[in-house]
Length: 170
Image 1 (tube, rainbow, N blue to C red):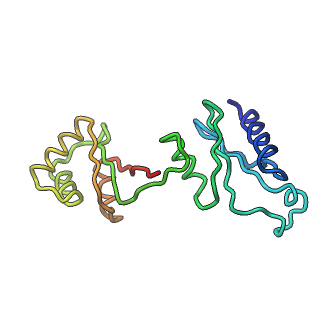
Image 2 (cartoon, helix red, strand yellow):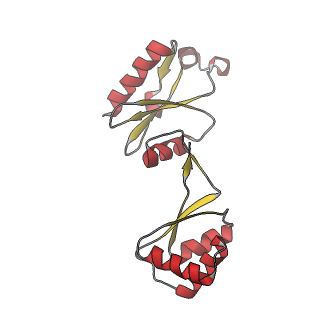
Image 3 (cartoon, one colour):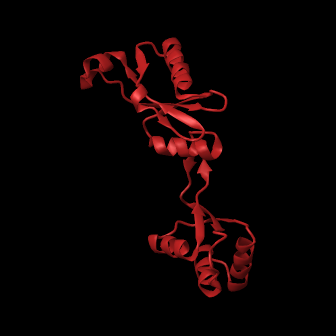
């Protein structure tokens, strides 16, 4: 799907469901699998007066694969909605910062004692379990656990070659 086709889909949706609104083509954002198309009230687009501005709506996310439309709100950063769509095909998912998915960069040099030490600290597991986790990660596995990392722990993990990701909530 092209940008123009996506914008036409959203403009047709607006004409049918939200009269008095138009897309703002110069604001359209594009990612690998979707477009984020912004719109505003025709009154505001004409007058540019703040009192004519509609508030609360976010962009419409349009899937490049099937043209499906997702209406978003302004309560979330557009980049987060796009990121959610990129990862899970759903712009409404939000990051769960209390859970972590940890993997290991396949090019990381293994510093066993440091890696086991940080794994022990952040997972609350013993040395043997932490060694097994490191073995699993070295073999391409992941570990999913609950913890809110401190900035220092996050930096230590990055330096050692760990990849930190967060699951997404609906």
